[in-house]
Image (cartoon, rainbow, N blue to C red; front, side, top):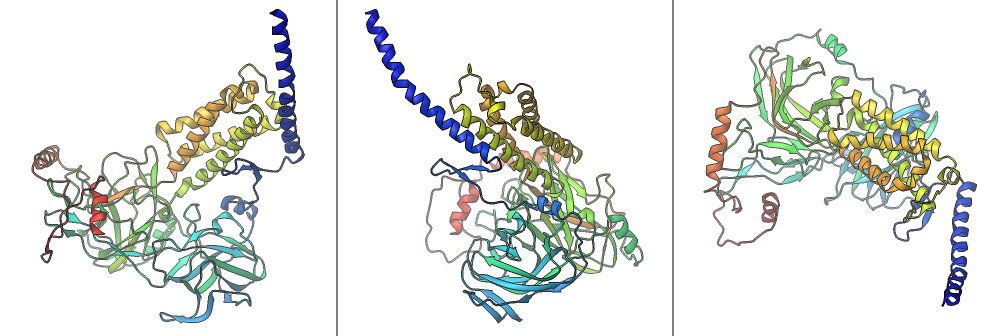
Length: 592
């Protein structure tokens, strides 16, 4: 029996030896390949789960700017001349369209057109265009921008032509007395636009580098139906700060009255950039106007639908005479905990001064009234001429844009390190084995130190900007502590690999949440400087009575039924449909 066991053990050892040799040879070949090509980046093909080399080396916008830190930005405006190419297909040059001549029309998908521009001074320039979207679909029209045959940075790829929508009608009522929102209609008119990428901080437009002499510009559209009437490269004067703006306007007469107070309900907006920016409702506060304890009233706009950088809403505001006025609003930002939401404020298409590029609305569970001003609560005075003006508020990342980009870059680098680790340890890690990662990955410690230092810099920067981040930001501190432990004790890395991956995922999710810029507005007001601010809330008794009536109404109101329009009298029969969704989704289905 003993001899039989010895023979069995010997056979097992003979069978297992080739397998171990093969695995060790495979590991060595992978490591040797990495050592011979240390600069190669490894990417994973999701379909085949095999390594493949990444070929996209286009820098992001911030790295591009670092390359041209000392480049000039000449204050000029130069028109680009269309240059038809012999092999151009699907593009019509020199067309006439809606009062414009010499128009370039992109008829086919994936079509491209060329322009040449003669630049006197090499440097960084903005791109300005006039365009119109003619296609009838719900997709955003995107394009790629090429300068001298190349994409200089990632913000020149997949740019979206801004769109413009308006309400097809005013807010209506159904037969039960509840408000019904109108549909959105896209406006097909010529638009003037400084090419911009809302995902990065650009101060209004992206920059491209043009050499001295003739430069070639190419636009390649994803969808046909776009037309461009003009393209130019330009740079404008830098925006003044508020103090300089006041010095300029103090020379003008101030005839504003002392008791002027004007209000526009935010849901009564003019144009918007997106069809999802429709009126919403709030029944939590009696101070939200208009309101009803029993009926549904569309009395706000924004919420989570207005959280993507680049989305904007416009309102018409009126003043009785030339002079200084203050602008404010009743708002709520209760979704982005620990963060502030940022908006760029412009009037009649112009940002009056630099501070309006990043107006911040802090987190608060409750509604609050804010008059536009600086961080020290010094309220801004806007010089407005008599008549109607267009106020636009556009969602933007503001001062945290560069931090978001850096955190995303760090996430990619940390994921690369994690992949390097599991290529050596495998997915099932032996806690009793020393994998000698420092020897297998020679630059591991250096990379970990670099990432730890960059994370520390970003956390200090975000704290200085007023970003607290709540409990979600704790994961960054935890990751920094873990990296510090990995640097001091590399042998502990394999045992903590799962926690390491979890912390990377949490940081990525936190950085993604910072991209959202939600904001809800009840009303906007324009007032004389001497007029007091309106109150954000009502008395405790008024709020109690409002909620009490809302509670009593819930026993008699049918909030689960959606009826037809109040003025609809020609319906011969009704159709009943049961929808296992919310009221908003049910209203959309009914509209269909």
